[in-house]
Image (tube, rainbow, N blue to C red; front, side, top):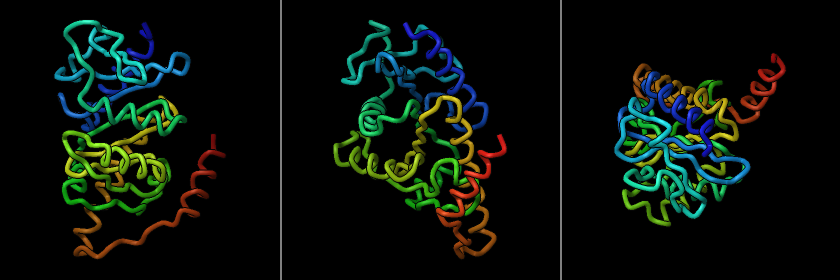
Length: 215
């Protein structure tokens, strides 16, 4: 079932790993099927490089497992995925990454402002959401609120979440998140922790619209 989406999900996860965005068993990736509403999600405890279509999980929006029936379970992030899909009905893809620079800011509990035009791809700011291993309702509510303002969000001490309405641009969004985090980190160091100039939302939207006109 949904073999094409499984193949696409594996490629996204493995491309993320090649770009140092998702490492071994860290993070999670999912795609929502438009027709059935089912979620195709990476499994728990299996390294990205070892992913196969036979160990990719399919669940419904209530979290009931459809495939595979025995032995392999969805990522422990499943609840986050399901709640965000329910709240943001426009999105089709969800990635939880633990890349170096984004994770650094999540550990420092510091929001990443829009300091380069790459920020336009995900909405400007990368806000910080509360995170607990048990994924309480309070944390989920906070995450959803942050993702209502931007398609990228840090989790306290646990990397970043990036979402998209398209499976085609999710990886480039994630790359932009890590790139902006890296530039921001280096700018802070270079400026002795003086904050760099922020780009306004209007400037970002103008840049985005002009970029679209080029295609």
